[in-house]
Length: 108
Image (cartoon, rainbow, N blue to C red; front, side, top):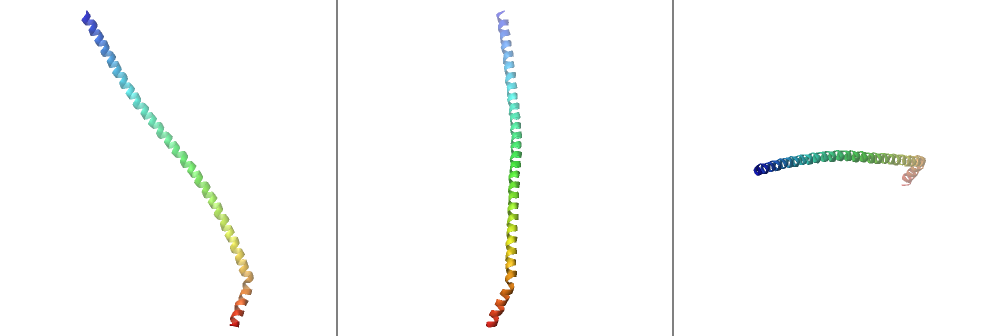
C-alpha cells in the first residue's frame, strides 16, 4: 500500500513537472510574441516619425524656397530700377559727353 502511495505521489510530481515545463514553454512563446509585437510597434512608430520629419523638413524647405524667391524678385526689381536710372542718366548726358569728346579731340 505504501508503495502505491509513493508511486501515486511520484506520478503526481511528474505530472506537475510536465505542467511546469508546459507553462515555461508557453511563457517563452509569449515572450517571443511580445518581443515581435514590440518590435513591430517600434518599426511602425519609427516609420511614422520618419514621415513626420520628412513632412516637417519639406515644409521648412518650401518656406525657405518661397522666402528666397521673394528676396530674389526684390533684388531683381531693385537692379532693374537702378539700371533704368543709370540708362536715363546716360541718355540725359549723352549729347554733352559727345560734345566734350569732340571738343577734346579738336583741341588736340
